[in-house]
Length: 274
Image 1 (cartoon, rainbow, N blue to C red):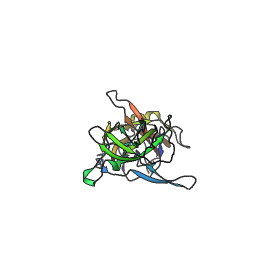
Image 2 (image 1 turned 90 degrees about the vertical axis):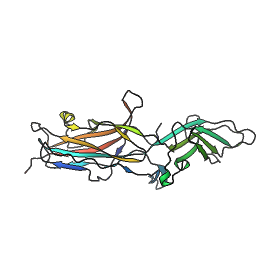
Image 3 (image 1 turned 180 degrees about the vertical axis):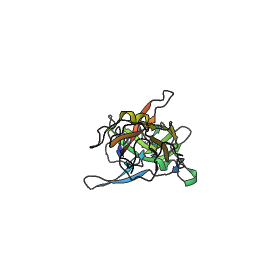
Image 4 (image 1 turned 120 degrees about the horizontal axis):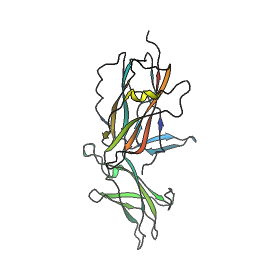
């Protein structure tokens, strides 16, 4: 179960130049940039109260609105949806009863902890937090601090210390795992529409999307997307389309597991080429 995700995330960041525009229906598509490794496990945010808080990172789209002029029937634009996959996971446990002065417990993680020998990143570096919970999985604060002590990669057993004596506790482990992920890229009608823009149902056939993307942990991926408007198309002055990214479901079904982000948005402005 992922945290920090509430359905579709609408994200607006800086456009990093991953686009080409051509004035004809045929052109050579520039190959997508190679993957980049970006190891980052937390970031600091400012709450509305002014409080600074450190939170774990998660899946992020790295591009935002694309505004295109001189782009109408018979034109083509080639782009990249640039996204960053951070393998964040939270597991929940009901601990043992702490008898005879015992203050340590363990949890068998559902996924293996991430480790990178070349950067000197250990397993325990990727345990973001160990937290007390109530029976409904809500985080609670008590006068005790849980600490990850050791990890066995063969059994995925994480040893945790700091439990109060003579207690039995619910707890969670939030961590970064080592499993790759598969993402589907898809087209959908914007909701709600932006003021002044129209939706063109035929645009679904104008968008050429890549197949499922397989991405390694902490990897930035540029996935190519082309928008080719037929010469015979009737295009409004401004139309809007959205391309989303969703993690593919496990198994052979090939369905969508959870929408992890939305390119918000490609606002396409069309006018006659002078």
